[in-house]
Image 1 (cartoon, rainbow, N blue to C red):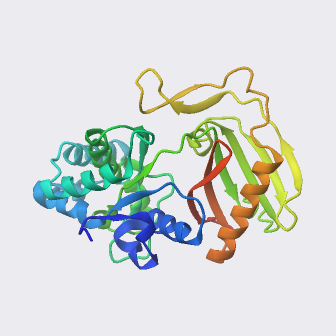
Image 2 (tube, rainbow, N blue to C red):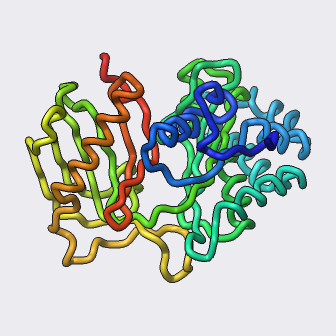
Length: 322
């Protein structure tokens, strides 16, 4: 086994500190039998290896005391300096080979694109998630672009909002680590989020689903008007359905032949329901299965490719107990 890289399906709960909550969850879901896009995780040791090989530890340590959390411009400037150091670093040869070998085994002529996602861990801590704080990249093509996006994932550990989040949670600034996840790209036609409890009224007998055309990025970012469904958790009957006039979607940038782009929803799809009864039943069954396995209400990101459901992430619903 490589020191730096491991396939998702081989990850287990004991790996959470070195590969973060997202990657660990994907490993658990894969073994549960839920359909998860195949891929691999780059362990936290890889990031530490990069910092050491580029002599960045002392440079970053010298910037951290300058962070003034009462001054946004100060935080933005100093975290920007750290991000630049990481983005401009050189990935050591042994690490580059490990990533390149796993990438070559993952892709083929039919499945050429990957997504690069951030999975967060905190050394010597049970904190394993900063939802929405780190970057994700879609429709990435070629090992050079993968390596670039991996460096950008590592650099996103030092966004202004990530530094603020660590400060608010009393987490030491230099204890955070990102373990990037590289997965085959789902050619998402419909995507969104699912909650196995109602996050608004906290009713645990509901399954709440939001969906839009294209990638789920438009849903989780809050930029789109989304279709909204509530299912009865026991029967999976539809209790509420609201079809919105959808205006914005995220998909592959056809002009570039890679990367994602935000475009208007085609007029003929704007008012069409994104999900059929079969889609909703598949989502409801998957949500219940994941909730039963974890033993708590879950927040799930998902996508459909040609009516095949893929689970992209699952985590505990935050704030439900309050």
